[in-house]
Image: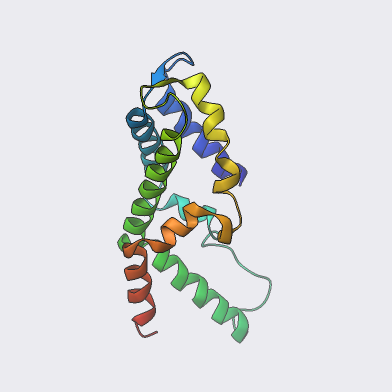
Length: 166
């Protein structure tokens, strides 16, 4: 988690470099800014570096001999999971999901007074921070996760994934 936070912070700093707290952002510039941050984060490092935040590194070994059937099955599962997560199809679905969440965040910000005509970055940041509990809420109460779950591309991806024979 510390590594993820550090990399996201670096992307935010790079995109916001030169911006002042008194600069005015509209919902359109907010959306563009968040998408640029996500794009920079996703493109930093190896093509699929972000997968290391989701699962253990590929070269992780265990103390149990590799002839152990449980360990062999576990390694097979990890390998198959990594193959799915590094697929172009999954990357496409992740990008669509992140952009959809960005649009939902901006729509939520539009309900805040004054943002339609623009708001200073200093006043916008606390409003964005107020959405963090919702973004990190348990799945049943998280409208962003529900939004991702309802995307047709996500349904299609998992339909195709689970319909393939092992």
